[in-house]
Image (cartoon, rainbow, N blue to C red):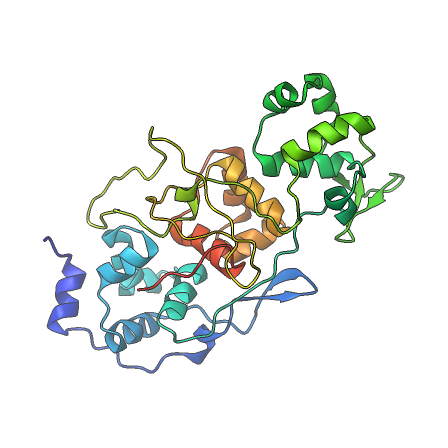
Amino acid sequence: MDKSVQDLIDELGLNTFTNPLNQKTLVDYAFQYKGKIRPNSNYDTPSIQDIHSIKNNHSLTTNDIARFCLISSRTASKWVSPPFHEQSKIVPASAWQALLEALEIKERMEFKPRYPDIRTEVYETSARPTKHEFWQLLKMSMLNKKKISELSKISFEKICKNSVRGELEFENFSFVEQVSGRKLKTSSTDFSFNEWLILKPIICPAKIYHAPKIRASVISKVSDFDVNKKEQNLNESNKKVIYSQLSLKRSTPYYLDTDEKYTPPNKQEFLAVMIFVGISITEIALIMSCTTSKIERIIKGENRPSFYEWRRLLEVFNLSSRRNI
């Protein structure tokens, strides 16, 4: 099997980094306060000495790190090279701390989902949703408006008219206070009682903590990704779609493990999970260690998250079980 230059260096024991691990790299890089996710100013990004300390103390090769993060050996080699750090580039916190947790060096970073910004009575009674609540339910169902119209026999125009994302409050705007406390410009849907009784089982989960139905491959930890190959396609194939299985026990992850091969989430799945955990673009970018502009591109379908970015989101909210190394 081909070995990278960095792996040969690893095997020959030519790395001379023996400095102790900076304890500030073990501090959670984010924390949750009153439901909101915030950056932790006490966190330090790992230095090259920290990375090689972990590698040497736990007998890890660069390719071990590449396989764990599902990145190329070339990218992993950059992360552990002096020039990368001399240019003030940093190893993403989402990848670094997931590795530390898998090695049981630090405690797991865990957050509680805020859940969709939808009133409990919408789930549990016949109360009709606001237009913003209906928009969230529609996005989490991942059904397009045409399909919902076909299933419900309610006009496409009426579905569109009632699916309107709420806007933040501005001066002179009337607003409806949401479950989260946000004040959004929205209004009640105009579905009749009978129309909502038809629509509800199509798009509304039985309980607020029932996660969206997404493909099993999207929450998978299994992959045949070859870290030594330059170009590989992780996107969905033409095989039959198998959906994830949900666990209704709150002591276990929301999604059950699967043997399906990993594929990145599409824009509908990403947005559905984002709405389910109830966090903002800024918060999700912090957890995934990427820019808000990348999150916006993912939502638009112009980009896909890296494996380690997406896995971090799933794991810190206990949506999926943790990886081993």
